[in-house]
Image (tube, rainbow, N blue to C red):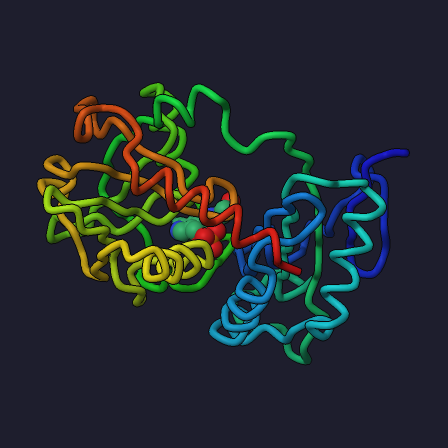
Length: 286
Ligand code: PDD
């Protein structure tokens, strides 16, 4: 059976799935998206992702194309038809198709809704888990509404490419004051020299990761001391541990920043505990 994509009400072979050249997602990056992991046939943190999707849509004044219940039905149907047991589902909603004009189309047009899935037998390689991953740091050149999960991802595309060219997994972005904002596609965390887990507060400067929120709850449940505040590159360089979180990495240890070892250069206990606790927590998810 061919892999299928969902495009505006239809399940189409992936190779034939397309949107119009005047889709505002293509013309202006005028759209938002979500990525949800599928673990053992269940969506991880589904409600958190759908709540954030609704918020992103509201913030850019795009109507929700179908109800949340209908979205869930389509997600489940696409996952069923593609027989995905472990993998990812991508949801993209744009303002729709209209002749190119910066202003919103008037009268309104129907938003475009696209979903695709991808199978992943494993999300991280045994080597990545055993040795941790390396990152570089780059200036954060993005706009100031990073709390909206928009498909406008060019700074992150450039950042991830720079990381790949440096043989690294991710790039952490740094704000004008020298504090880490987040990764190109993940939230940033450290465990300080004193053993305190730190991640930046969610405001317009970062995307409030759904995984991040779950991990904070787990840290509390596991009695891991944590602080929600900015941390600088200098502090990260003296940290015991560092990690990234996202729907695709869960909690993944970082062992090198800009070529320098973090702590003793191997994944630490806090990252390992959080990763294990996340998978355990998701066993009971939707
Ligand atoms: N990215 N920050 C940014 C800039 C992100 O793009 C992401 C996720 C996160 C983590 O959010 P969450 O925990 O809700 O996945 C933080 C997804 C995985 C992506 O674009 O592929």
